[in-house]
Length: 378
Figure 1: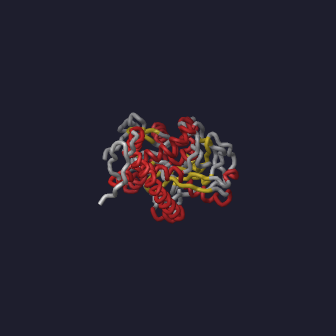
Figure 2: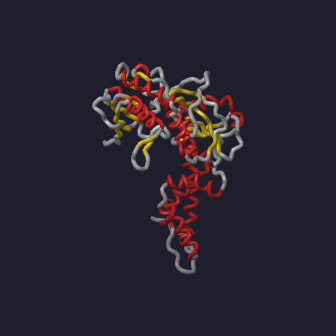
Figure 3: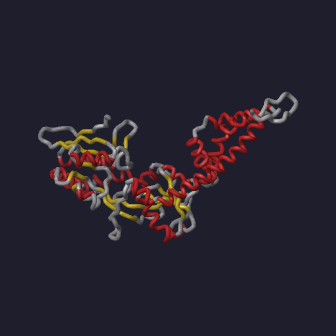
């Protein structure tokens, strides 16, 4: 596998380091259209390298792989929005914190909700297995809101935008960056929950000179304003002091942890899926019979209508249909479509062409001007 490589100009008198970062975690690191990488982490390490006079090769790679490469000695350090935790301190030496992070909540731009207490009885959209979801769950009993889960951020955001969910919880930096880039959400309160710190890391007991250089460089770019310029470039504001009562937390990403934490939601999801599937098949059977009857009707208009419906939904991918019904239609018609209704409609329409084909043999061609009794297949 070939990774994009960026190097600060080499010099024989300057130390050179191999540093890794994540492939994509906007606004901290992400690839631009021209193939180069940028982001808060990328610009910070470049600015520090320039200040401290060392050269580096920056290799974007997946977070877990990069972290392991540092421990194996293949990389000298990692800067990838890595939270400083007591567990990680056992195997890494961390720099002074270069960024504080935490959880915030957001609502639709059209929403009049300004307090968490106003979420009582409403639905909150969360991303499965995240620290944001854990934080929201810890507030659920106090504020009395319902929870719905999504596997990706974009779908979660859109659920709030179209009005199916009243709010969502997300990492403050990621949310602010998304809003800055056009996401139609707003942040009612700047109060941060579950705050933590990001740090630059090296293998424990190794690369002490690099770690010291990072700390010196970080202090320098904060003093001369470079740091604030970088943060403002991506988030529109500089870092603020974190409240003294905020606590650092770490979310595990192991499969057993995720299963344990989300077991009730998993079971409910399976039950809901079965319900939607059964209802979808029943409705698709009814719709399929109707389309098949229209397909053998005397009226050319009805036959054409039936063929068009079958042709459209036979070639339409399930995910495209789901997104159109759940996200596209609410935007076009300015109406709310609950997730359960969208699911039933999607499964029904997707299943219709199959049902029509299954029923095809139950109908004989009709001669012009008369109906015949449908004859089942032998």
